[in-house]
Length: 428
Image 1 (cartoon, rainbow, N blue to C red):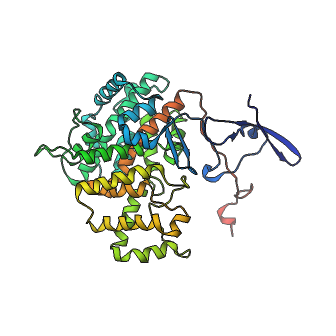
Image 2 (image 1 turned 60 degrees about the horizontal axis):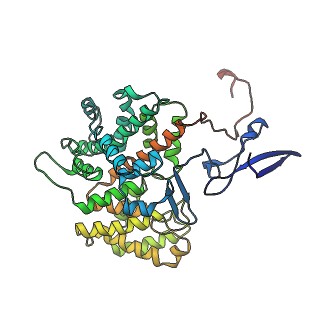
Image 3 (image 1 turned 90 degrees about the horizontal axis):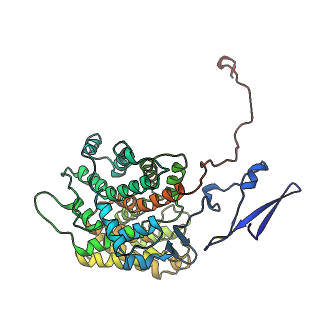
């Protein structure tokens, strides 16, 4: 039994609760007994609620710490690879050489998608948002891979995880190719994960091309930095859908839908749109003044973070990667990137931003980097979904591997009390 207790006195009655401790982070008060006392907690946005127990990711926003299975994000992003991080998140430990070789081979076995899935794309308009297509196509995967949908079977769950990791780049690239009217490019399993994705995005049957290694490395880092972020909105959505017993493809599709929101996965696209709105370096002062004006609704997108009250630890790595890409593609003279670099300088030096810790975050740098690579802004959230799939499936698998309850939040009801129905002819 826990050593620490918490007491709540309501109308003269004392309620006692266990205080639980994790390996890191603040203690939590187990409020389950409240359900028997006819009281609920009220916590809009679940800002003070631990919805589950997890061993996957730890965040300390005040100190700017992000750990995947205990490993600092900057070490993984600098020294690891995305597929190695996938193995880590899914299995709990880093692989040895033999385990990693087998994992890569298993992923490569599933990179192709069923030929009939191509027909799904024909049902969408060419100008449909790629996220709209991705939600539909990923949700439909259960119609093609229903041979391993027993969620109580660990082997079935593992195969579904491998399929999702392997097929997301293929589907993401197909979304892009469909929008521009080019033929789909089949995956090349001789290439690395990020290299293969760039090949499927920008290659054509007309000629053989090899993606720039600097861009490959940058994209692999972006995948690592976005692989997981604890119980965020989309991950919580995946867990909530999973608690109903839904199949993994339906759960991931639900997560993609949640990620689509501009307050979540659409932040890097919003940051780039802001740069377009500013338009020219000469206009930066005007927009900075608007950002400082408490009566103006304008916000600088890509600065500050809801979780990190210090510097976003992912932004440190992403900043370096961003400048490497700008150098590699010769984009420092691009007007858009000139605006971005000037904004970055102001945010790091201006007292207003420094005092409020409104530092450039990972969305700011990843948006600039993806744009410099040549990826259109409407594909940014698709790439985020591609990277976050491993986090979603790791959390889903963790939940399925242990006892869990159907998610059923309660509410504070403020509507009308009970009243009798009155026929329409008698109503005034």
